[in-house]
Amino acid sequence: MEENGGSSGGGGEPNGETLGTCLSSLIDKGSVESHRYFLSRITLLEMLKDRGYSVPSSDINLSLHDFRQIYGQIPDVDRLRFSVTHLSDPSKRVINYL
Image (cartoon, rainbow, N blue to C red; front, top):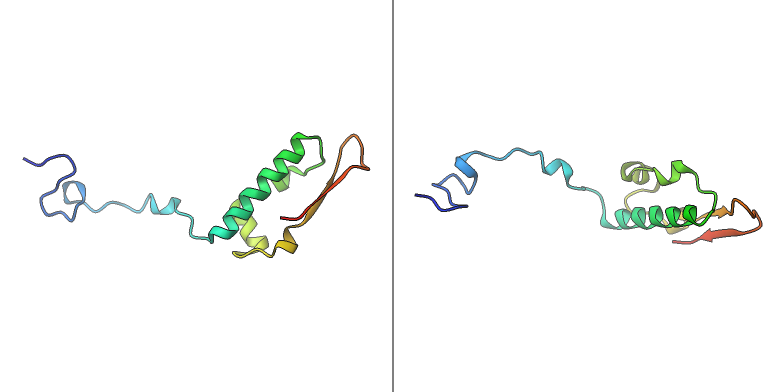
């Protein structure tokens, strides 16, 4: 009798069946650097919006795929710069350098 996790020569797969590729479709094949910049940028934009700054929803809702299409796999930090103004006092401006 087989123990849990054991197999009878099926290459370590349950019941000798080959597993599908459904999980491999969830693996990010892009650079770690672009993913980190993407997450940092989204977090910063959300924080600024929460504090009353004018942040377009399209910037916050940008997907990782679209981010990489715009900025590339190894983003140039100069291209990631942006500035926003406060909704109630436009003289308050934040310029971000990632």
